Amino acid sequence: MVTDHIRSVLFSIGDGIYPDRTGRGYVIRRLIRRATLFGRKLNFKEPFLYKLVDKVIEIYKARYPELERNAAAITKTILAEEELFLKTLELGLEKIESLVQKTKAGGKTIFSGADAFLLYGTYGFPAEMTEEIVAEQGLDFDKKGFQEELEKDRQFSRESWKVNKVSLMTGLNVDKTEFLGYSSVSGKGNITHLFYNSPKSSNSLSQVDSKLQSSTPAGTGSYDSKQVSSLKEGQAGAIVLNKTPFYPEGGGQVGDIGFLRQGKNVFKVFDTQKENDSIIHFGEVLSGEFTVSQELEAEVEITRRERLKFHHSGTHLLNGALRTLLGDHVLQKGSIVSPEYLRFDFSHPSSLTSEEIRQIESWVNESIRKNFPVETKELSIEDAKKTGAVATFGEKYGERVRVVQMGDASIEFCGGTHVSRTGEIGYFFIKKESSPGAGNRRIEGVCGPAVIETFQNRFSELTESVQNLNLKIKSELGEEGTKILILSFIPGPDEIREKLEKEGASAVSFFRDLSENIATKIEENTSSFLKIKKI
Image (tube, rainbow, N blue to C red):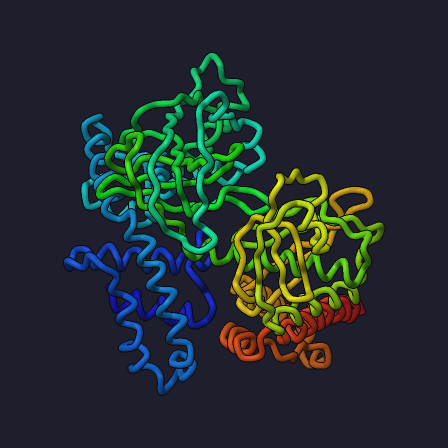
């Protein structure tokens, strides 16, 4: 089973399908985690799948030479995924055992969808893996119930949570949390405050609140929060440390996730927020107990933070491009920096032309190619203004601010996390331009690995559309339709990744033009097909 899975995973990642929460990436994540679980039965307690990459490549490299070229990236991806799952595997297995016993003790023969979703959301257990484990214990699996819980989770939005967010630190004696995250993604800190989140009583919940509560991750949503001296296993709550590498949501950048640990005591962080000078970690105790003054090891999820850095630095370059190419009237009106994408709202009176979009995209990619150093300084607000740094419209600043400069491409007030040189971003691609309201425009884009994934998905969809259209033309028009068959070259996943990795940001324009030309060809030839068919 392990050999089958590692082979499938290796070829899939080689084709540009990376582990993810949805789609094809979810299948890859499931295979890795299933193999990791099986490895535990063989007494493998440390990552081991990544060690098999070179051996599998050695077998297949004669027929698939591209595997050897991508060996380092494949190995790194598998290792990161193994390490992520192993953080919660043991705890998850203990949890599933207790849930199975609870189910049997209640005289039930079906493992509930709610329990399966708990294992999925908190411990990273794919539903199919949970189904296999409970089947070994003689239980059926509630697939419908799991899908219902999953759908609730998908409908939940960050905005809904913010409506219900409460103030925790008001009236408390607190010192400023020292942020360690500019230079590290791990570090030690002592607990200064603990809060327990108990669900609101049913008579105090509105119908809307009730729906939110049922679909909200532990530590957020509709709850009564109270300060406590300890948090125990299974309890949702919040932990404040005197020092932390976790970045709290701010400046458009979403909060970090990860783990707080001390020995077998494990707290999973679902979100990080800031209230005044305190950084608050929201989450759930997976095992053990936490008490005030306890020293913890804080671990930020690394891959997610890396993608946040790519998108935040990319946002600064985008702002620089807009102000350079469109004019100084451009002011930032809002932004979202997530691991998956960036979204930037700005003042501008009209929609952007396709040529303007290309120019902006090329300007950003040229700044990436120049590999500017990213320099940060903490200055007084007056000295910061003298540098010409761009401030965010409507943002409140203290007496001292952090200024982030990227060569001559960008200089802004910013407290977020960034790359050390612009070249680390890799590539930038504008996916969409629209309007969030009168007088403003919105750009949605991607940076780094997300650009590769975007083009791979886009060309995969185009390939399917071309194949379907050509099949219709051949079956319904025969020889008469030969002249409208689409024979354009469409790159595969390997070709897309290799060109981007070889040529860097300059390859983005090539793939943009190619994808748009193929899409236009599909539209034109579909119209021609329908006209010929009518005759």
